[in-house]
Length: 415
Image 1: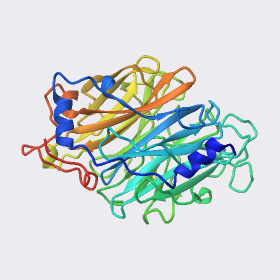
Image 2: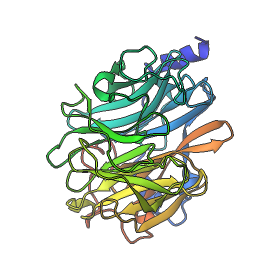
Image 3: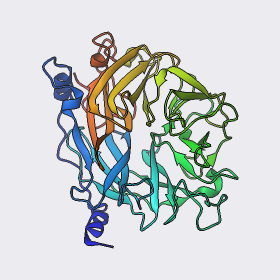
């Protein structure tokens, strides 16, 4: 192991939170100002390949707001390829502008860690990360990947946890209960998972999945009903097809809505729904309002209809590039993803994989890949619901002082 890699691994245990946060009241008012820079111009780099790290590229962003701490994770790739002996690296922020120095959350040690999928348990205040381990020399397109759970060359599912995003538990192998029989490879997310807040499965942690072999993907969900102690996989989707990387959000009734990249590389994104917390899935269909240009999308719920403090509206947001892997657009739905009447370009220029997360009442954050040859920067910026809708919807109730439950204890909710 070279000295740069040793130093980066050591940094995982020395990670220090940024200095005292800037008040979100000031930040929010500046976002809303007509004189303020666009989200494209206001972005800050969170991960930069080769800058103080040994990575040839940094890709596959994931982002959550965990009790007021923004936690960003990505793959640090030693070679610029999907299975490039990737580590999982992490950075955290309390104000969205200053981010901690990236540190290693899990070192692959010659293997490859792929598809970090974060999910926050608001009841236990625990951050979970679900991901896959490819043995050294095994690629997702390899033709001789064994199925099952025992062979040393199997692709495996792991979980690890953290209370603060800084220090992570030792990864735990959960393959035996989260990989279906006959499956060669899996992909979690790589958008975040969700914790159900209502319905018969309230409290369940859900990780969206697709399972191979490569090019023949099916949808599934991995879930835990005991706060991460045990994990199991539900049934595969039985109808439709053409899916790939997936994002998920909770519906108004406690169900799940999933959006997938098309495995055909274009056309429209695939969608499906579950009424039993991810145990089974309905028909997979194409959504005419969600075009796909061969790239993963982001998706996050901002509010439920019964939350008067956030304006009493159901809102789900979606992000994706529109021109190759350029020009990022955010859409918003008021009816659990059936229609998307709001659409606006948020990022002009390079824009690939992306992920959305609520930051504070009225404000959303977006973490996205910036393409620049073989080097990938991952950048964060914010926008308001008010800006997204050109003033038609502030995303707030009349008082304007709401809190996002369990997610804003360290952020000012003023302004």
